Length: 168
Image (cartoon, rainbow, N blue to C red; front, side, top):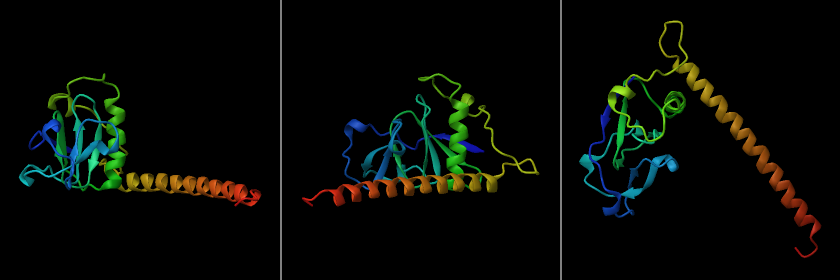
């Protein structure tokens, strides 16, 4: 499903100025792996529409824009038609598969390429990307509904406080 490669160039975070325009992706677990934004020679940008993979933390994120990386990052180039929605589903399946390994393990290509992903299959036996897309979109709708209900509850509570306060 992927071609796995090392990043085009490993940049040392300690030598960078974080005030640029391109994401600098590291092995951190939050913020899509982005430590900050930098300017550097653009020939070393990793391609957009790929997955960044932290080799000793097994953190992985879909990168929709070209990006630079730090040390111990691999880049997964999809061999399939890939977009944000499919990436969310596939990355979830990847995280589930990699959760069987211990933290700090060195993930070389022989290990990574042999990890089985459990993806839904269509009648033709190939991954069912339509199902994956519909599934992720349904989750997004449910979360937006939850967020809307939460915001409505908070707004009602704030209005109640304002209505009951003679000093406002």
